Image 1 (cartoon, one colour):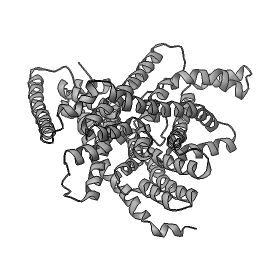
Image 2: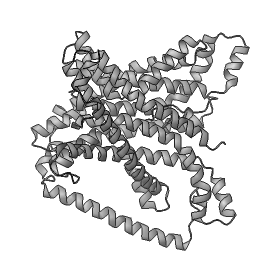
Image 3: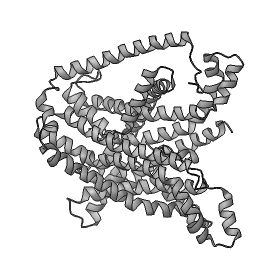
Image 4: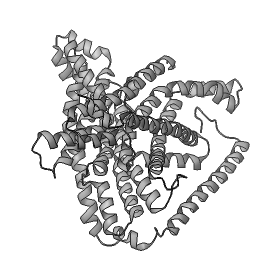
Amino acid sequence: MFDFLQDYDLAGAVWTTVQLAVLSAVGSLIWGTMLAAMRVGPVPLMRAFGTAYVNIVRNIPLTVIILFASLGLNQTLGVTLGAGGDFKTINFRLAVLGLILYTSSFVCEALRSGINTVPVGQAEAARALGLGFGQVLRLVVLPQAFRSSVIPLANVLIALIKNTTVAAAIGVAETALLMKEMIENEAQLLLIAAVIALVFVVLTLPTGLILGWVGKKVAVKR
Amino acid sequence: MSSVLHDAQGPRAKRRNIVFTVVFLAVFAALLWWVFGTLTDKGQLRWVLWKPFFTGTEAWSTYIWPGLQNTLEAAVLAVVIALPLGAVLGIARLSDHRWVRVPAAIVVEFFRSIPVLVLMIFGLALFAEYTGVSSDDRPLYAVVTGLVLYNASVLAEIVRSGILALPKGQAEGAMAIGLRKGQVMRLILLPQAVTAMLPGIVSQLVVILKDTALGGAVLTFPELLASANTMSGYYGANVIAGYTVVAAIYIALNFSLATFASWLERRLRRGKKSTGAVLRADDVETADAGAAGKV
């Protein structure tokens, strides 16, 4: 019943999906944290930039960003991201770039929502005790903010795992593209769909359950 | 200005701010310079490539407007079908009967954990194999099917957390005066929950609108994004110009929807007509530790 799977590299496609997800997650965590720092920081210009970035990028479909990375950045402007002439690598890197640019705006908002849950009184009390800016941040605000950011960040990660399928639009050989290929060549539509669905359920459900549990456990009770 | 992170600033902090501003401006200007330089090098700022969008109406009436119509048609159809479905699923998850609650929960969690694109590709093949839908209509059907399956389960969670956010006393009071379970839901809980859910539902529209673009990229659905690709073929490789215009349209549409959602949320919070807490527009998910975020 499952012999058709032998002709396809399902494990390879799933591995590509996982690589896309992990690389983009790390990248968007870094860039998203920088954006959040700009958005909550004291410098008006950087705050304006952070706000503008989030509001613009969040409202463009990821599909548009990733297709633009391929058609615009690569084919029109000749950006190769150091991959030489290897199309597979170029498209993979462009997909990661697109996912990072898009997802970081959501990471920024998740972190900011964490900071917003800390009552102003906490910081005021810390300042009243004579702690400096660095100490307030390190000892009082950030420990609480990180703990309440876990659940929003987990939601962003799950959405990111699902969003890696958009890379299929520029021909990255990940799971959704493999599904399309299998459906075109094989007759067992429902079976193929079930296998692919299972892959994503296995990737996302445990992530959600584990991080949700961790998030509830570490959340600051108020 | 005083916030969690910073107090009113003194002279030293103000001087430091100026330094930060200057450094940031320098970096930003260098980036802009690079972008501008690359665009000029590749001849992408030539007026020929941008002209179709700014002079005459041909590009708008032949490509952009029909594409936008298809985008909106798919989004509206998806919302109209997904809303009642989501409401039913959400209420079913709150049922007292295990045989209703558990299957509803499984359906919701299943479709929330699968990418919309996978659902769309499946829908396309399904309509091709088992129905007589003509091949011209199939992409629209597939896009709407994918969007409905995914968003009905997200909306189900919005409905569920909207009802759960109401104070317990509402249901208890209603039962105390002798209403049946159905009446409690229909007369007491749902009307109050709907106001609490509205911002969440409106901001889900943004997600639906953005996801229609998948249909254009992968399923040959002739929507707004696909029209940019058609135009670049017709007007001579103006990918940069076309995508800029299309992205601007998406931003304008989604930004107004998102602004409307947060205005609605503020307004509902201010007017104390409903007893329930108003769900936040940007993430309903904090109400429960559920799976998908609104990304």
